[in-house]
Image 1 (tube, rainbow, N blue to C red):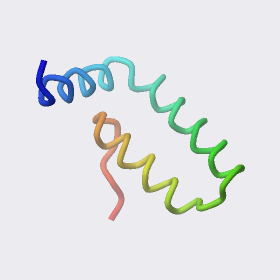
Image 2 (image 1 turned 180 degrees about the horizontal axis):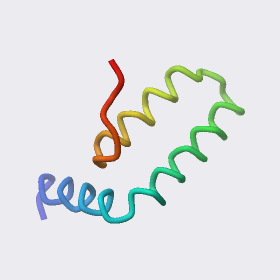
Image 3 (image 1 turned 30 degrees about the vertical axis):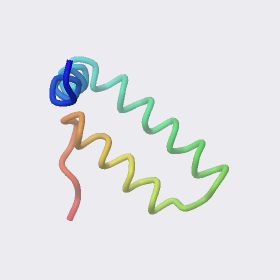
Length: 60
């Protein structure tokens, strides 16, 4: 399995289980914000993760 295949499988999982993955990303982001601050950077990372999984488009 190449890197492209792995990416495709992750994106398929994102489409199939997107709601659960999104909840997990949001929960992890909340904990990271509590512990480290840096809210803007954490929000950007979560947005990129959701974009990668096909959950939402990044805000401009």
